[in-house]
Image (cartoon, rainbow, N blue to C red; front, side, top):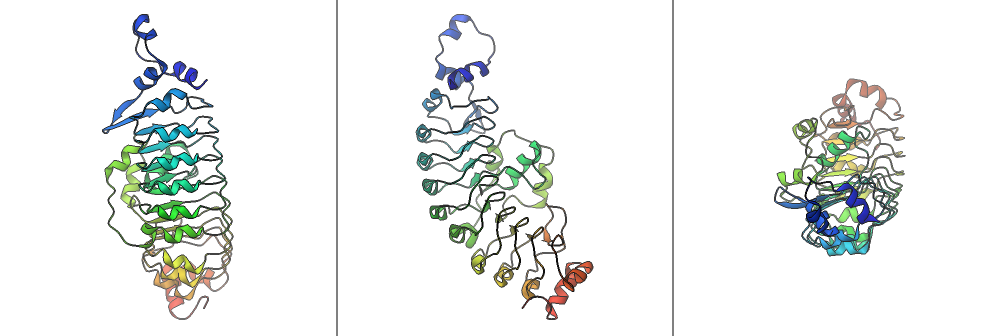
Length: 352
């Protein structure tokens, strides 16, 4: 059935009937593959496929495979045969799980699985230690237009993103993904920060970023007009944790383990208080606490000196906090901006 879908979609330039009839189904799919930035790339996106064509598993040379925006409910275990895959794009399907065999893709550097129905992540994914981008997000910070969701893909480069699924937790094995510099778990059902996060080396320890322009070669389509603004903002290689729109009621004190964080987004949860340990994350340049139940802030928050202003636009660096039921005098002090808040905290204000 999947092969029939591909035959209908693979419309090449006209050739003689004899030559066309001589092609096998695998040949037809292979002809649709291209060389892109030195990689063997095949896109079967937007085909309306309910099943992956069996012939696909014969294309062992593939390095980038795009199966996005179909109606797939299952990725079969034959996925393990494509051992050369560097990029796998599964976003916009109906997947409730990923196959355990994904752990055999030890060369995989990018995984997109956002806008699915994932309820769990297989332990075996922890074997994909080359992963730099594991993206399962659906909505970007500007609410999910096609262009802006692609922009989200770009600025979340080197991401493990499992956003907009139905996850409550992550397996401990994901602590093995030592190359991940960004983790996106937004729009899930997470009530507690998964413990594996505190062991992700790139979030905890400083290391030299090795990511270059190759990351821009991993995406379909290839460009959107808004991209330059994001590079100007300098987000591409930031160490990043996105937990917005979950079920968090608190952040544990061991948040202090994530010493390299530059961007922390926890908007849209049910946070009542902020831990003192948050104030030790002195590399933070963007801290989004909006749309929670925060009434006061820790006295030591003034140590977060890289938060340069009160921010409002989702892409702006700074402190996002005004959309909370803040009590006096913090609410009144904030009318004078972030400098006024920090002066107030230095003078002994805020939660002790």
